[in-house]
Length: 116
Image 1: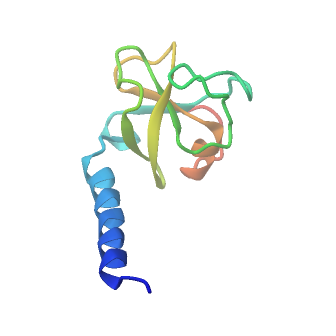
Image 2: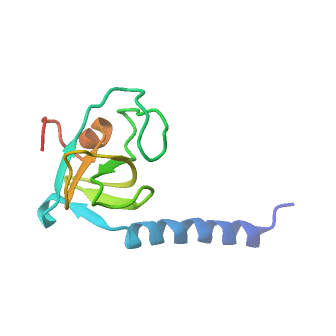
């Protein structure tokens, strides 16, 4: 027999974690002065932070410069749409408020053109 209270508590905790992630994550938007670009570094190249192979379709991958957010930081990136992303790589040309997103994220965010 399933304990309904346990299911209710588990559901509440999942909802709470989603709210905390969305509300507490720093927000990067083009309209707030952030420069958001995408990169194509070749499928399979290890990501700097995780050493996992890069997948251009992965919409969670974001890279910052060495002066940007630390590895593992969670960001909410918004252009035409928004995505919750995790800093998994470093961007050699990124400084200050400049981030690079994966190709999949770039397209999902609503951008079909190339560049910034």
